Image 1 (cartoon, rainbow, N blue to C red):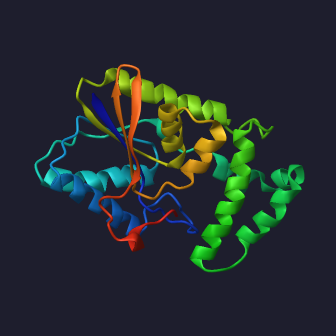
Image 2: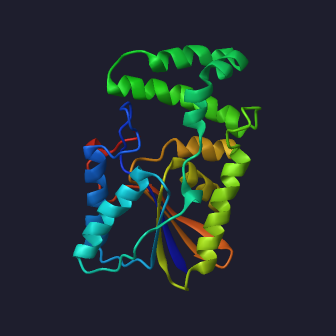
Image 3: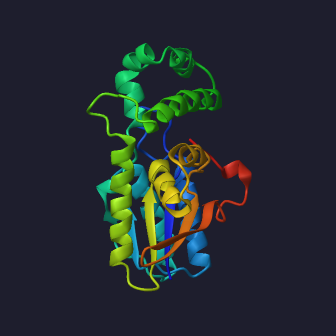
Length: 239
């Protein structure tokens, strides 16, 4: 059996001008992940990342600690298929159209745009994000330029299948990505419906590990949303 470790990126810069940059805390999370892998002597046969800075930077920092321990860490390969979905762009670029179609989302969107502490704004953002994503997954008619759930899920599954096919027997592989692709891989392993997968995905922590064993077409969940490298709950973040 081979091993696939899917890592959600470390905490990004939520509510800043550029979300796609790890926060100082996100950088620490990534470094501690690499130190954990180094401490347990884990060698990797292949490393993949999504195309985003936050995904690639998490891999870079984790890999730095692994290489310092003289363990195998191949040069990462960036794969566009492991990019996040576009629900955030849907909210930012098409907010008025969404509210017109779904008036119940209006108060959630207004609340998300109001002032408050970082924690309050993150919580309010999550509510409108979830409401929009549920309608997106259900296949509602959104602007044509927005990638559908079906198309998003298929691109992740296609890339996952190719990674599995190209892996040598007994390989250990890491993929650094975001919540959406973690959700798709989880659904592939456990066979749950779309909305259940989506709801479970909301629980994925920054820099957490979701691990699978695979051989041929067999793809089995071993560990979900684990944080062995962050034993203090005060270090855990969603955003």
